[in-house]
Length: 137
Image (tube, rainbow, N blue to C red; front, top):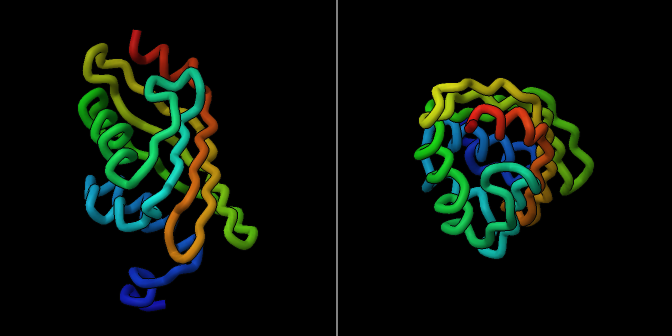
């Protein structure tokens, strides 16, 4: 697959991968382009940003921009993809250092995505929230 094919692919795994690449690069415009207008993005209960965010702007303002303000070098390192039609589960790892405490995190995470029509319509995060909270105290 050429880079042009990847950037325009509507295959669910490609859309999700573009979201991770945009997030890692801090390219919120490219990240919003992977999200459906009616996206539902759920950060796990117990996570510092717990809740469900809607709309591409709501997701980037409520999650990505806040992570950037509260953490240094917040990165989701995606490594394993499990794809079943429109469902994509990604096993990954978060790394960052909390700006207020200087404490680092390195924690495994699972992300469940639903992709329809080349856009992410649903996201749900699963993470050891205690490890993330410990870095903030």
